[in-house]
Length: 259
Ligand code: DGL
Image (cartoon, rainbow, N blue to C red):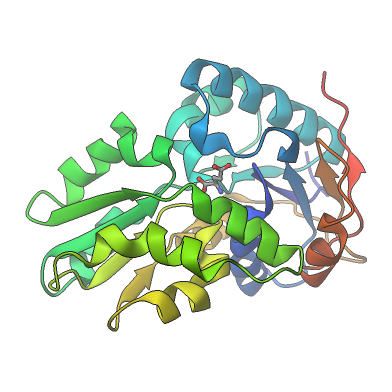
């Protein structure tokens, strides 16, 4: 297959943090954005239900967009359903998982945090990454589902609630030696300035978006050239998404028909 866009998928607007990085690597290439905003947040849902839902939405979005590559720009979805998606789809599928390996290399003190959804911080996949790449480090895992909503609000043009952000980050600051935080949810880099302002000291904030963009550039072939704003697909029409998607170069969303 050739001549289609790269499809970037997330539960909500978080995948737009990955879109920016892909645009940096592949300027001029066509991107389509798809999100399952009707079922947001994914991080608090049951695994069995979530696998079926992710397959259903991604299959429908791949078909509707005629994409040549799927980027699952969601840690919660990738740490659960990447294998199933790869088995089911005939195009390359790039996943997003927490940047544990770079954090272990960059932390000077050997104590870093993982800020992600409830699902991601406790998944066997995530624990396996820690076991494989950070066995000599201390890793403080913090579930911060409330930040998903704050990122959605920020993209809709509202000011995030600084108290909510402060409370979500508080468990990270108990040990003054913690010097690095992995943003293990794609929504969180959208709030990076607010997170940095809420931190009591200088912190290295690490996310996976550049690595995903690099991988996407390696596997995506036959990508169409960008000629107009990219298409965007949603599972619930919501006018609050229009301006935020436009800021990232996407046309007003249309409703994705689920098979
Ligand atoms: N952006 C998603 C992630 O990277 C999760 C947000 C949600 O809970 O729906 O994990």
